[in-house]
Length: 123
Image (cartoon, rainbow, N blue to C red; front, side, top):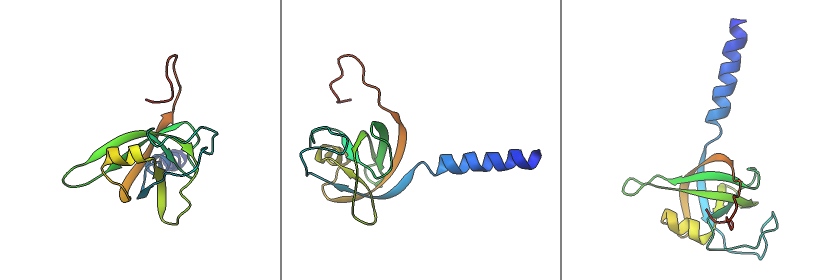
């Protein structure tokens, strides 16, 4: 019984630790429609991720020694399709993080976005 509890605790700890991922983020500005059917808006705080479900809110942090920054984006597209990259950000999201090409970031899923009355897709 004690061994089963220890194994369960280790599995839960591993799954929580595996939620956040670090890697390279890029900026994308292409296409008329995203994978979930929305119109691509370069001014929105949205992103493309390979595996996170559409509508997931994710905290994206750029840890620089001189200026650490974090933003929240909503996943509405699939990608990136370049090896070694973990997330594609819209130009507005990349600008909020302070980069325009590639940057090292940490991505942590927060939960699913649930629109409220009067919410037009921006948060």
